Amino acid sequence: MKRLFFITIVAFLIVACSGGSINKDNADNAKKVNFKEKQLNISILLDLSDRISPKINPDAQKNDIENIKTITEFFKSNMTRLGAYKAKGKIRIFFSPPPANANINSIVSKLIIDCSKMDNKGRKSVYDNITGLYALNLEQIYKETIATSAWEGSDVWRFFKDDVKDFCIEKDTSYRNIMIILTDGYLYHKQSVFNNENRFTYLLGNSNLKEYRKQNWEQMVEQNDFGIKTERKDLSEMEVLVLEIKAENASNKIDEDILQFLWKKWFKEMNISHFEAYHSDLPANTKTRIDNFLNQK
Picture (cartoon, rainbow, N blue to C red):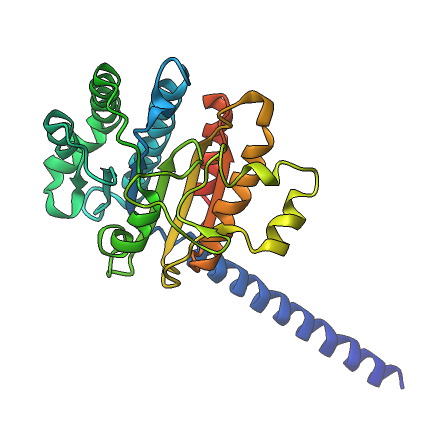
């Protein structure tokens, strides 16, 4: 009996040790799989509406530029992790529709970066200069827009309907497709103003948002199926981050909660894989949120 007991204990220990080794190997393999770095394909969609007017929102320009600095620094860290020979990241600025201002369009052309078409010297230049390049040229874009007060706005709804698949998603699956939208959260462009029952191509504080400024707004939204009109459901290869949502009137701060909810509802309906929407905050706080979003594999 003692001999049988001894054999049983030994067998148990062998199995336990073996199982532990297998589990450790599996855990290590999982870490390797999760850590695999993808190339970046980053699209930044800028809203040049009156939200950037110094009279309406004096912090808009500073916040936008600081946010984009955080994004370009993440782009650089991706280049470092991949190494000079393998870094093929892409990053660019979008406006929808394109600005009528020829100078702004000329500036934007300098902000289209595609490392897959560069040699090592070109990639090093991108690494050394991208943050300064973006900050300098964005300042010029805002200066031009504010000087003319030509608030062209941004037709985000139509951009998602017509363009996002062609312009912002790489067919090469080694890329991570990320869109960052800088906007106050309200949707409006004169070329896209219509609705189908309670689904709208626009969201305005003095129009369709007003009746939801109540304590039970979320329940009302769901009951009425209120939201943004969804035209597609094929964006599972995209990630979208919305920044700088800001109520146009401090007395209606609830707009920020409603807008965040509606944007995320829209993204979910389009089957976007990873999304978030944040209200405007101090750049240091927003930086934490951007980093958390971008570093989530």
